[in-house]
Every structure is written in C-alpha cells, then in structure tokens.
Image (cartoon, rainbow over all chains, first blue to last red):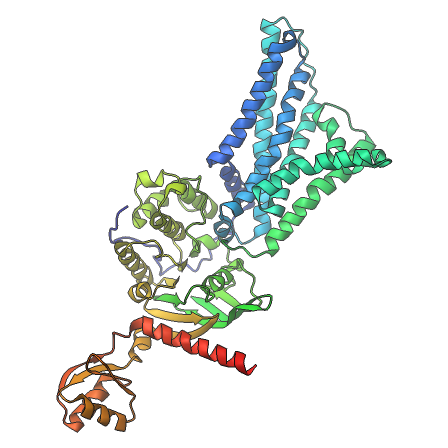
Length: 269
Length: 303
C-alpha cells in the first residue's frame, strides 16, 4: 500500500458529460454479473464442485456394485438426487450472500431497480443449474459407456429427450425456489434448513392426516415433481398438480422475497 | 450537486433524521459531521435510495438517486467499507462493478493505482484486508465509474495520518475538477483536514451549515496584552463577551480587528492577537450539539 499523492484523474474529468449518453444497466448485463457472482467466491465454487464430486462418486459406486449393469437412465436418476438436494442451495447462496456479506449496499446502489436484480439472480442461478445438469447427464452417459465397454453391461440408452427436458424444468424450479427462499429469509442457514426440512416435514405430517393423501400431490412439490426427476410421464392432472405445488413452493416464496427486497431498507447492519 | 429537502426518517416513535435540509455544491468537499448515532448514515442511505424516507426528498444531479440511469457512472458511493464479500479478491470486486456499469476494464488498473493498492494486494481476498485497505478498495469502486458526485460514509475510518492526507489530496483534486463531494465523519480533526464546507448534524437535526472558515471565525479572538484587566473592561464596555483565561490572556467574542481597535482606544499594548483557532471544530461542535441537547431536555421537561 502506497500513499502517493494522486497526480492523475481522480474521476471528475468534467466539462462535458450531462450523463445523457448513459443507458440503464441492461438485464443481460445484470444476469451476467449475478451469474459471475455465484462463481467468483470460494463458497460458490465449492458448492458447485461438491455437487459435481458427489455426482461423480454416486456414478462410481453404481459402476462398481451389481456388476455395473445399469442403464443410462438409471445413471441419470442416480445423479439427480444429489442435484435435487444441493442445487437449491446454490440459489439460496446467490440471494443470501448479499445480506450475510453485506454486499446488498453496493449492489443496490449500482442498480436501484431491485426487482430486476432479484430476477437476474434467478436467471443466473438457472444458468448455473442447467450448466451443471448438462455436466451430470454427460457424466452419466460416460459412466454408462464405461460399464458397457469394460464390464459387459447391456447397452441401454434409454433416456428420452422428454426426460431431459423434465430434468431441466426441475432445475429451473429448484433454482427459482432457492433464490426465493434466500430473498425471503436473508439468512443462509435459515433458508437452507427451511428449504430442506419444510417440504419433508410437510410430506410427513401430511401422510399422518387421513384424507391428506388425495390433497398432497396438489400441495407438495416433492410429490408433484417426482415424475420430473425420475423419468415419469405427466398427464393433464399431473401438470395441474405440478402447477399448484409450484405456486405454493416456488412462486409464492419468490414473489414474497422480491417484494421484501423491493420494499425494505437496505442497511449495512 | 446534491439537494436534500426536509428529509425525515422515523423508526416507530424514534426520529432518526428530523427535517434535514442542505445542499452540496460542486467544486467543494462538504463534510457531514456529527457524533455516532446522529443520523449521518441514515441520511446518506436515504440520499442513495437505500432507505425509504418517511417524508422529504433528496436529489442527486437533479433527480432522485433511484431515477438515475446507471448511477454507478454518475455517483460514486461508499457507505460501508466492510460491505464486500470476504471471499472475493479486490480486483474481482472492481471487475464486477466494471461489468455492471459498463466501464472499460482497463480502468480497473488505473483506479487501483489511484488508491494505492498494488497488484498483489488486489489479488488477495478482501477477508484478509485491513480496514485501511478496505477503505481504499471502497474508494476505488466509488471512483471506478468516473463519477461526478462522491458520497462517502466515514471514508477516513481506519486510515493512518498519511492515508488521511492522501485522501484529502484525492478529494481536493476531485472537487477542483468540478466534482461534488459529500463525506461524513464523527472525527473532527479528520473533517478539519479534509472538508471545506461543513454540515453539522446532532440528534437527527442540522445544527450548523456553512464554510468551515466561516463557522470557525465565529469563534472570535484570542488576545494577550500588558494590561488584560483594562482591555477586558474596554471590550465589555464595547459589548463583547470576554473570558479571562487562567493561563493568561483573554478569549473574546469579537473579530481580532475589533479587539485591536478597542485596545488602541484604551491605550493598551498588545502582546498577541489572533483569531481563536484553538477553539477549532471540536469546541464548535460540542457547543452546537450541546445547545441542541439542552433544547431537547428543555422540551422534554416542559412537555
């Protein structure tokens, strides 16, 4: 650190500049910046690395046990479970780090339109999630290729385009949900615990109440979203149930989080 | 140019900022002075659109802050040097700001240079920075967009005397190019060194505003003579308040020239006569905020 006397342009090179040539920050720019913010810290990188490592570990175990005789779809299903658990956390961190690290103060002075920032976080997180999905499906394909080549497994390339699109849709939901809970609760531990526990508890308690079994698919995202993750098919009622559960577990927290962000005071403490 | 009009912030029954009005002119460094909890930070957050005002308004460059297109290019803001992700490097912090505001990334190096952070320091994570380095990084992100206005909350906090000197030069330079600077501090010496215009705030209210020299000149004169008693008498007859100091000499509530005239008329020989600089901002400040505190107490008693 030096204490040299400034000799040069400390900004304010005035005379021109009515500021008219400046355009508002575009949504694409915001999204790119928010995406970068998910990856440029050790915590964010580790989160994604951990998901990749766990996925690779699951695949390795599957290749080792049972003679490695698993279809491509079985490998893909094996990779989606860790993703389903951990991806929302990436979304949570994208939102809560603004408060836990107090960067909201900087973010919202550079872009006072806070709802746009929140939405950029969602889109950026979905970007991360989809990139990870491509990676894990690729790893699953590689695993299947290896067991076919070296362990005499039967080749079964049985993953449809629809199954992949379903997975992509679930990634979108996970990420939007994570960012939503993060914006709503602002605390990383609170948001993660709520996100992981609430649906489980909800399902458990719901299972105990008689008559809930009929209602549960409509209000429990875990139940309604199951076909997305495990290669099932959704009929008209299935989509309706998914939409209803999404409204409760994704849209509502996200809307609440965006509302809270837009309305509340941003301070450093 | 920053215009603050009747800005008020209430938190329930507590009034954090009470009908604050002032303007910050371009070409000057304006100091926002007050003790901790006086409402400086709340006012600055309201100016920057982070805290909604209960009533009143603040405009920066003629508009509410939130209505500025790409505000990072027009207003450099540093509200809390600690408000940076500890896991990012200093350079990454500036890179994000450059991407967001569309500033040429080559400016990152220029700005790092300007605030005196080396390449190696910029490559370290902010979590390892000292407070002084964080302040420099915060100033760098404020200056990055080549703004016309700077809004800095306690920027000298954590800087050593050489750092404060450096910051004064930097802000002087910025203001002399027509830039507008508003900076806050609770440290009077710091303000005395850095600002040329001052807004004093106490308990959420503006208690004084003006040119630093004007504010200080009201402090009066210090005089020593061969016959202090006779001079004091002459001055009191002239209507000036006089205090005889235990250490010798008089503290007079009058301009030095009037004291000189009174001495000449009374035929007293002067040994020393100067503006009472010893009072300084600190006395001024304590006096101003004490008045406010007394008033407050009186109001509470009568209520």
